[in-house]
Length: 169
Ligand SMILES: Cc1cc2nc3c(=O)[nH]c(=O)nc-3n(C[C@H](O)[C@H](O)[C@H](O)COP(=O)(O)O)c2cc1C
Image (cartoon, rainbow, N blue to C red; front, side, top):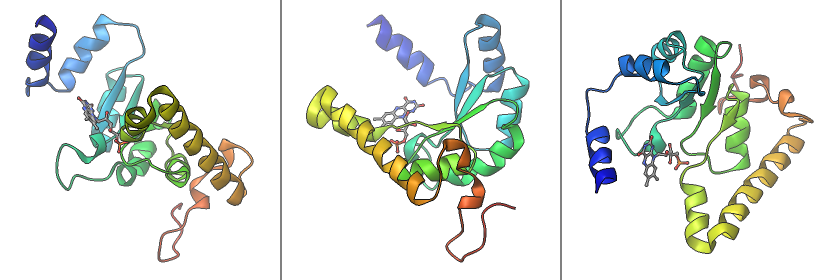
């Protein structure tokens, strides 16, 4: 019951903002990652507050209907803070090509939400492993077919827009 009450107090506290991050920073030397960042200004502010990294995320599209896609937000955020902090990304990562695109746009890694839970629901621990193994295999295949030997080879120059314009530059 105490845990439930604590959860409700925390998650219904709509007044939480970046000032609370400053207080968190004061309380721990552990690495601090801030999740749900979609705007470069918030990312800069997080870096100024001493946050170690951010997860560019719209929480899997489950919060604001029509919110900016995390992948669309990624490049400007990487440009703003990529040299100062770790930038991870989630929301909608389903295939090896999704991982490839996120890394090409500057994410250092991606996170998975629902896919591993689906694996868990279908086949427990083995299901989660299968989801991860399949994703890694598809990612490596995408790398090979795109001519990338190492993750460092995955750059924005590898991407073009649907109309043929380059993504980089
Ligand atoms: C059932 C469910 C509950 C979630 N609850 C939270 C939450 O309390 N806090 C949070 O930051 N993200 C929450 N998320 C979002 C995930 O942490 C993650 O950002 C998202 O699932 C990634 O997108 P994907 O599911 O498309 O991979 C939740 C996601 C799901 C599916």
